[in-house]
Image (cartoon, rainbow, N blue to C red):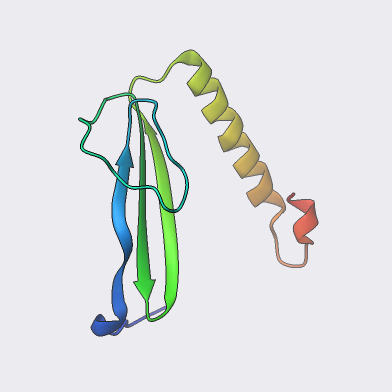
Length: 97
């Protein structure tokens, strides 16, 4: 697959948002602040625009996670793997939900 984007159509949707320290705003209108980054749970979001289409990606990174965070993360990874397993051509979307 080869895709060529027109340079003049590529832009950001909003400034990247980086949050840490337990004070997270997950709304689309969130903004970074001037607080120093804390090395605990870090949430990063950024948006890209091509022509009039906007896309958003967010990631959560754990630095020295607690045992509880590790358990929650493992549960999410298992749920994702189970959904991917049933998301096959011909299957109904309801089978993954």
